[in-house]
Length: 114
Ligand code: 5GP
Ligand code: ZN
Image (cartoon, rainbow, N blue to C red):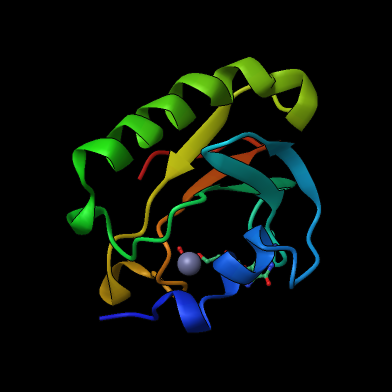
């Protein structure tokens, strides 16, 4: 089990307690620059409502995740990306370190196959 809202770095970012470069902000989610980019373009799309894991996703939250996926391709100009890769790390062994669900959006380079 991961962090709860009280100790969540992404909730702090959403509440403005921790500064970040917010590129997109709507009622349901934000998109920020990753602090430790793994590609020339590396953003995080973060639902405003805290939940730790994809496995905990409710119907309402899955609607938000769908909205995020629908919106990202429309933000190519805002994010200054062309093609991109979207990743969710579900759980510690998969590399999840922040236990507030988020999508990684990676771009700005040629990716190989897995
Ligand atoms: P995870 O490993 O949980 O899938 O991804 C967490 C991501 O959050 C990492 O890529 C990490 O660099 C990023 N991150 C951690 N703390 C902060 C922060 O305070 N600000 C921003 N912008 N990104 C962060
Ligand atoms: Zn949170």
